[in-house]
Length: 267
Image (cartoon, rainbow, N blue to C red; front, side, top):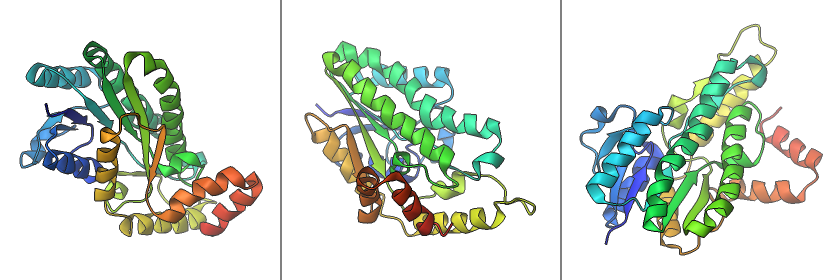
């Protein structure tokens, strides 16, 4: 029997690539979007869901269960970027980012766990970020939201073991998607003390995304995780140096690693 998969944020970017790949492999795939009517030509159904709205989450999960009778895999992919000097990012925007990147997946997880317990099995894949393993300059809020989700997953895994429900993180590096267009960018203020370093870092970040890896690599990685009987806690997908940066942080003194990051961003 084909596994039923729910992918939040499945209308574009990494989520869409995952959905297409899994559909081609014979999975029954449902994606989500806050504006599903825009994606009538999607190769798999796109349902309405806002990870900040519990009602839309419950309705979509219930729709899938009523139609398919089960829900085997959930990919928490919906997320939002945010950049800027932490001092200058409005508090409301910081909270909004955590609502999407951290509390959003929590809401989805809470909505699907009763069905997975009923089935006696299930898999939840949280799409985090390599940025969540380190505090990156002018991406500090994003790093914090994704890092929080990484740690939450570690704890959740242990709580779910007795129910035969698996959970894992898949952390991408920079991929060639439209994520930069959807980020909240704190404005470059003419009188800001951060104007030049933030502007230069912003240009560098956008270049990394433009020259990022093919999103199909993430799709293949998620497929392999689904096929794995006992998934690991963490998976990192991306360019070698991005993955290696996590290793360096683990083995280098903090101040040395900080200096490497500052040199990379020319700060």
